[in-house]
Length: 207
Image 1: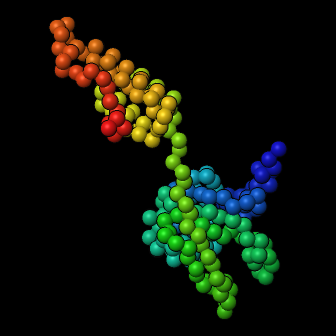
Image 2: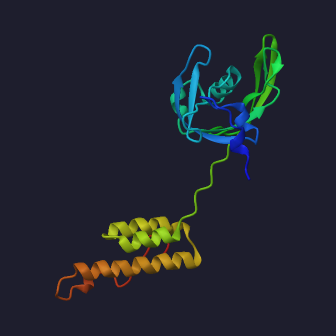
Image 3: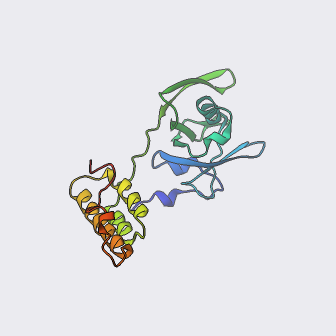
């Protein structure tokens, strides 16, 4: 039984206690002005209804890494973690910090003000791009079978470029068969079959 959901506090914002199980990566959907105490609300796709209200330390990291224009933040990703040593009123209460950011080319090392007269070194690592989802052979075959125009089959063919071996052969066979079906449906009663290619090809993979 996964107990992660049982420790989530009732709150209207992302709370550091939600990161006790470990770091999480979030995708930014919007950035809006907040209150005087918490001036920024960062809305996250993976935390619907509970925006992230970053501390000044985190805001300094974001501005240093991504710049001051918050509109460019939308669509970017960041990995957040719970730092148990973050203090409030002299007590270690824990807080949210950033470990990785997308859209940076190399690790960033920053000396940021932690408290009055004291700075700490923060290192943020580049966040690797998410792997592209595997192409669904079943979906491509279904799309080919339901294609109503050769242009639709061309789209399937382009998507099939990422396939190899038996998967590619299976999609090519369905594309070929569907092209022949479309050819037969459009061909006039007289024999004009010479206007059509004898076999179907998948652009980019048959060469």
